Amino acid sequence: MSTEGPDTQQQNTADGEVTEKLLTVEHEPAAGGGQRSILYPPGSTGSELEANWLAVSSALLVSLDDVQ
Image 1: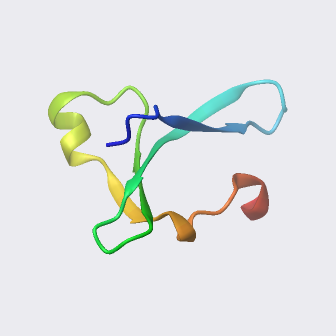
Image 2 (image 1 turned 120 degrees about the vertical axis):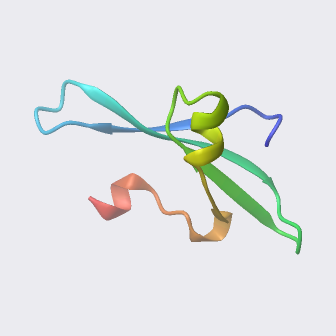
């Protein structure tokens, strides 16, 4: 995964005061060119991390603000 360090996406709850971490995103070069993003729950370690991740083209990611 990326050596640049992960980005953690956050979302405010309905009251606007509490922030909940949703996913950690790491970016890396894709095999066919471009970049892919690996998404996983924050705090995952070991076998938990191996079982709970998703890889997508970085071009397919959208801002949380765009979907709320």
